[in-house]
Image 1 (cartoon, helix red, strand yellow):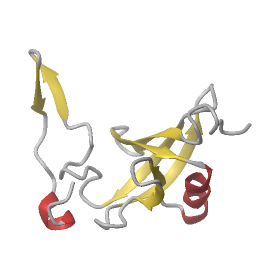
Image 2 (cartoon, rainbow, N blue to C red; image 1 turned 135 degrees about the horizontal axis):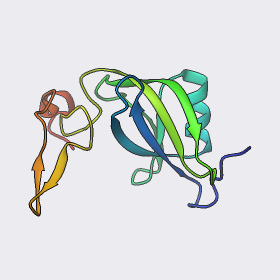
Image 3 (cartoon, helix red, strand yellow; image 1 turned 135 degrees about the vertical axis):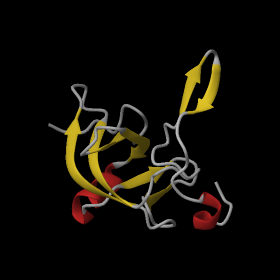
Image 4 (cartoon, rainbow, N blue to C red; image 1 turned 90 degrees about the vertical axis):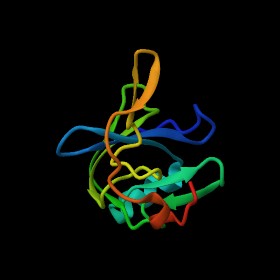
Length: 126
């Protein structure tokens, strides 16, 4: 069984889920090198499509993701990482999960409070 990196031009979506709670934390993309580094290090590494480079989750914030389990979907083109968070959240906007907004009566609302000060951690950059 091989991951099909070719289908989306060299990357696959990587769904990141908290291994204890089951909450979806974020979606990233991995190329073969990012996947290999994740396996070697035990920490989630992704491929930035905008910067065209690898990035270790937490390289700026220190909020790393220790990988507990990895699953591959039936089409072999999406991976699921079950992780343990090392830090208060994964979202660069200061939330535990990147999925902190919900649609309510046709309007997007913040469904939870932030868990850390993103401006302090990232220096105001998003």
